[in-house]
Image 1 (cartoon, rainbow, N blue to C red):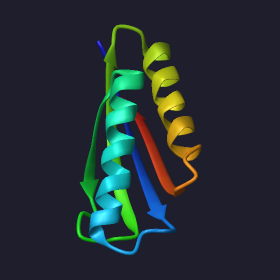
Image 2 (cartoon, rainbow, N blue to C red):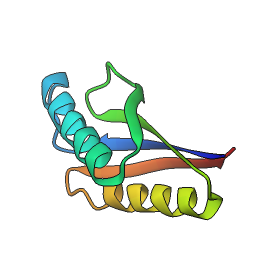
Image 3 (cartoon, one colour):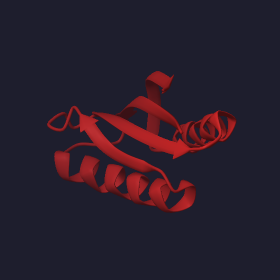
Length: 93
């Protein structure tokens, strides 16, 4: 069994309130979860309205599959016009 984790710090340029941030992040999380079949959540910076830290995890029997899925998740997050990606950390266990 192979486990991969991805931690991504994102910055919201247009957000002016926590309510707007939560709408954007919630939509991103739900779409990512459905599209890539990964576990994903906001794991830090909950009370900051222009920054969020997302954590994603993938489990599979093939390490290369886990790496590909997490790479696609990162590409998808980076493609969002509402976000700027900051620090990224990917770890394979």
